[in-house]
Length: 113
Length: 114
Image (cartoon, chains in turn brown, red):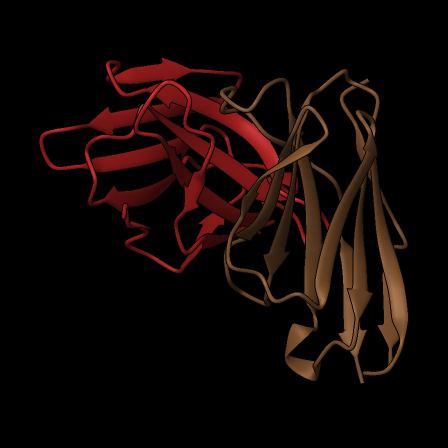
């Protein structure tokens, strides 16, 4: 199983809503990542978790709150987002933080109204 | 920081022809370079990687070439098929054995003409 799954596939939310994105992998990977991708642009790193602990926060606004409940799950909690936060949110995982090959999920297409 | 970019934003090739997608990088300290394929509505899919101490690596129908002298990376796809239509990103990793960060190039959209 080399699959990273993400739910929901699409999400539309208002600026006052609270929602969560979910990511799951069963490859035994201990590093997990959140990326943001705008149209026709490459992915931009947001957060990195290693062994369920936050390792890297790439100066992401506090309206994005990551959570890693266990080694297989990664959540991204959203609150008070802005329309410019609309993007494809990608989750990825790798065996370890030092392992360069990252496997990406299909993404969640987020629209903020 | 490292900058990884591409020469051509779009590329159209006839089905059955070979495709060459190019990438230039500015920081020669990367340990690895990786090519990802991203189809419409999907996440990036790992294609092939190459260590910085190698010049060439072959996979199934794909070959990556690394020219460190001119800081240039290319992905060659043999006998291009309609299913190869996608955006292709190069990414640098490192420097350092513990480095995790992928620095992506801008992407090249490959369109295969049937």
